[in-house]
Length: 296
Image (cartoon, rainbow, N blue to C red; front, side, top):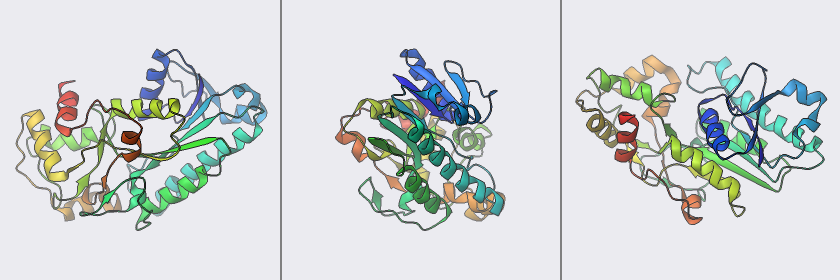
């Protein structure tokens, strides 16, 4: 397949390109800079495509992972960048597709599980309604609306959970207190944490490309979410460290501001669509996922 990836130099993007490269696909990363080189793929800039969209003729699929990182203090300016970067990326993909004579059959667009809102008691899957109750949930609603405007036969919106990887993403920061021997539950510990191992994250995107029956929203979360308290206990076990030092919510709010909602509030999100179509997770349970990541 000929596959174009935006955001290919990011955390998930690099792992995804390595996966597709091993399978022998023709890979292109679309970037703002020609210096954003990812091993296994050619780089084409958005500026080049403005003049020569034909460089992407024959595409089978576009995977749009581009967007400003949410792992920063959410000032007014940062919020604007986070929202605008996602809307712009989806619009750019849509404009590019319109200029191609032969349209790709599928666009996989990143999204987020925040679209469901937060709850300690509710369970969400792809059939659950949107609940725009805070900054992140409102961003994801607009993000998906922009993706829905892309004119291709099939659009898949990957609602990403907490992606676990030993070197990148949120996990290294979450593991640091345990490395120092001062790990423990965050806030009440009752908030749900819907997670997924990086290997399954990559595999499910590939699965969605290959399975023509899948379209619309797809929850990228493992089938067994856990509470923050359960996650901490399993992490402490995997790292052979204590789990005795709770971190009060007010400290998180002082340190991270509104960003603290990522760990203080949660959602129990299930991957109904993937399970319905026969996707098999390598890591169903958080203890196996954490053991693998810590051992690596």
